Length: 236
Ligand SMILES: Nc1ncnc2c1ncn2[C@@H]1O[C@H](COP(=O)(O)OP(=O)(O)OP(=O)(O)O)[C@@H](O)[C@H]1O
Ligand SMILES: [Mg+2]
Image 1 (cartoon, protein in one colour):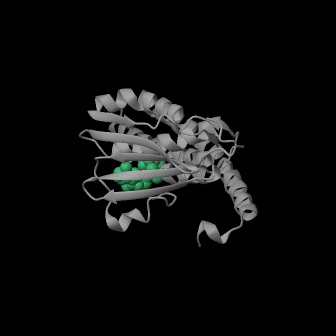
Image 2 (cartoon, rainbow, N blue to C red):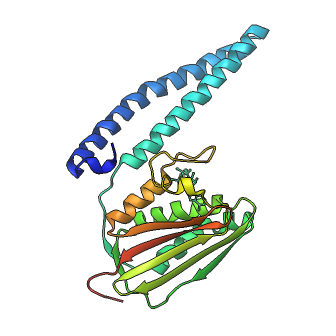
Image 3 (cartoon, rainbow, N blue to C red):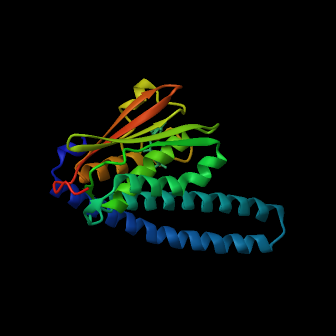
């Protein structure tokens, strides 16, 4: 069954149910974690080899509990649908602030950031902090796709009633058989990825009446093209 088989009321209901369930699991998980910590402290006070072995088992359990907790937190972040605050936004300014944020890490990873902004873009009516989050998710992926450095090229332009943001990287690219999956919830090829970055970005962009598309060549890099409608007031 896909997301499209539900209407938005049913989806909201399911989201609320799931978020409630996650909270119910998080609470006992928290007390399990505290008790494991206390147990481990007790074991570390003792000196026998058997206790040391038990202590390392308890630490393993603590790690797993921690992992479960972070999976649940990621899910809650994804399921939470904040109320959007639309305002007239300058897309170039929004992108600049995201690039400023990732700048130091990009430099550390030998990633060159190249910007080509159309300075005459019309304003868009958007929730700027949600759009920042969406762009950050796409740009972080680009960065993660270039572990040995490369180029991150961000271009903006306008075509009629739409503003386009092209985010291109020279990273590992995406295999053909995986391209259809990357926007699916929990699809990830990374060791520590949750697979919620792109589905979240897509949802935010669609809530802002836009679209996101991907072009990628395995081994050569990827391009994400985001389209957002310009504000009806055409205010510059
Ligand atoms: N620029 C990119 N280059 C190569 N592969 C990419 C790129 N962007 C996304 N992908 C692929 O799409 C998958 C899904 O991306 P998504 O952002 O949803 O999850 P993630 O990055 O694995 O985890 P996280 O939830 O931490 O963002 C990635 O695991 C990766 O395989
Ligand atoms: Mg990601």
